[in-house]
Length: 427
Image (cartoon, rainbow, N blue to C red):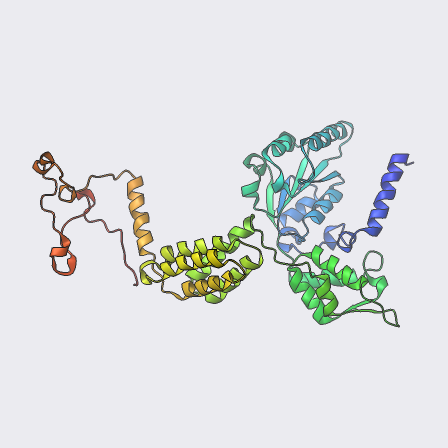
C-alpha cells in the first residue's frame, strides 16, 4: 500500500504525463520502440547487447539536441531495473550529487538495485562537480550516463572520460523523422489521433526540413500546429504549410557562437575557399551570419586565409581582405555582409599558393630543432674597425649593382647553404 508521499508522487507523475509536451508523451520506453541511432543501438550492436544484458556501464552520449539521448538513458535504466536519478548540470550542484551518492549507498547496502545517475548537459559541470562523482563512478556505486551536445574530449575531465565509453549520436534522418511524426499522428492515447489531424504533404516536408533531425522540435511544433488548427465540419484538422510556418517561426539557426559548432563551421568556410568552391563558401558564410557570428571575426579569418592560402599567387588578395575588414568595421551590419560575400567569393576563386607559409614553417622547424647558426660574415654589419678586421662585411655583394638584382652570394649559414625552404609551386 502506498503511503501519502508515494501517492502524491504518483499523482504528480500522472498529471505531468497528461499535460507534458507531445515529445515527452511520445518518448518510447523500450529499445524496440526507439527510432534512430542504428549505428549505436541498432540490432546486433555492442551497446544494444550490453543494455539487454545489463552490462552497459558508464557512458556518455554525444549528439545534437532531439536525437534521443535522454530517451536512451531512460530505456537503459528501465532495462536494468535501476534507480534512475535524472539531473541537469545547469540546475544541480555538488550538494545534489552528494545526496544522490548517499541514497545510492543506502540502496546498495539494502538491495542489489543499481543507481544510474543521468546528467543532462554534462559539459556544463565544472571540475569540482565532476570530481565529486568520480570516485563513485570508479568503484561502481554509480553508473553514470552523461548527455552532451559538445565534444566530451574538450568538456569532460580526462579522469572521468577515461571511465566512460563515448557513443556518438546523429540527427534523425528524413525517414526516421517521417516515422516519428507518423507515430504521433496515429497514436490515440499519447499522440494526436484524437484530434483527427491531416498534415498537408508540403507542411510535413517543411516541418522535417526545418527541424533538421531534431525530433523534439518536430513533435512539439506538430502539436502546436494541430491544436491551433480549427477542425472542419467533419471534425478534421487540416494542417497547412502556413500553420506549420507559424509553429516553427521561432526555429532559427542552430549556430552556436561559443560551442564546437562555431569552430566546425568556420573550418568548413575556410576549407571551402581553399578548395576554390564559392558556392560552399557562400553557404557557410550565410550560416555564420544568420547565427549571429561576429562579422569582424569572419573578416579576420579571411585576412589570414588570403596570406596563408593565396599568398604569392594573387598579391591583390591580401589587401582586398584587409580592406574588407576595415569596410565591415566602418559600416557595420547588415550592409557589411555584402563586403564579406564579395571577399568570400573572390578568395574562393583566386589562385592558391601557400609556398611562403610553408617556407616559414620549414624554417621554424629547423630553428626549433636547434639549428641556430650565425650569419655568414659577409652579411654582417661592420660599424667598428675591430669588426672590419674580423672580416665582417668582407665580400658582400650589393644586389642592386648586378644584372636582374641577383647575385650568387650565399645568404644561409654554411651548415644550411643547400637547404631549400621555399618551393614556389604554381604561381
